[in-house]
Image (cartoon, rainbow, N blue to C red; front, top):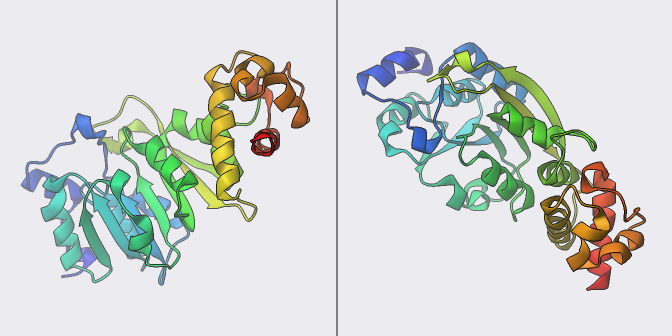
Length: 274
């Protein structure tokens, strides 16, 4: 049996009586045209290792395998084991892990080699997983991820935009971010109440060192925790006006207007004061 011999996704789901679980944030992407487009946008192919979180019935998994990439799929919902094992029987390039991705050791999975993350992320864990990959000890070679469009905008927003906040600063300090495409709710089963979007994140060559990145998380948490206040007030516990001045920033501006370079300067100033 080959990948071409597998039954259509809708038939496979129906045969096993499977439906999406709201508690897991599941929405099945069954349109193979879209899953194949995501696989192309991920720029993966033969010789590449892809980690996919939340494959569900395996629509995106099939598209990734069609590129010739080797895929490690991490699925929390054991109901999908028969469907995913059927895909595994059709190829030698699929490694299945039934586990919680939030607790997964991606460094061990990657085994010291570059690995790309490509996923239609479950809505309820998408942001925590992204933060884990942006700030944790393991750095993906690239990430091509689907989120609710609101989250995608929060990742790619520029200073002064409504969506600009802590997630944008951390994402853009560590990666180059690009919003690639919108995906209509009609592409999913069941259709979510929101539009989705695919974002690609590529690690920056000047990614902050761990201590600097930790400091960036501290200052952004304080600044955006009270985003409508001036820096001299929102950063009061960290040094307030003196900290802003040391970073070369006007203490009277608000966090939502400070660019990524400004927040890195704040992180450096906070580290220097410790």
